[in-house]
Image 1 (cartoon, rainbow, N blue to C red):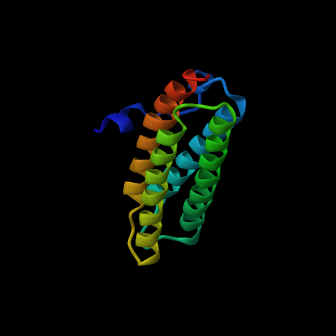
Image 2 (tube, rainbow, N blue to C red):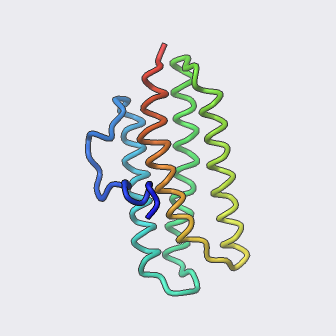
Length: 137
């Protein structure tokens, strides 16, 4: 079992907050969307059904918006981590677009997508964001 799968939380705990209320709320919403996608993916039989596809698109849209809001917040506080943060976010968006393209071409990368999202959540939202925001000017 991969490390991120072992440690992806079963439910949201306030200990995951990074003490920036707007970002904490967005992370909580992203957490719920990942769980929802995973629940649907586990129940899914091929091909991808409309409910699962809608959950993927909802998560992708929310995540894209959330990354922009996070970058705006980092810019507003003059965070020295903003350039690196943007680069990490661009990598995330590129990966989600690749999954979307695969789905639209008839592929079914949702199990892999869920693993990636869990990994991102644990490594980026719960770890990197916490560290980045400790470096507030």
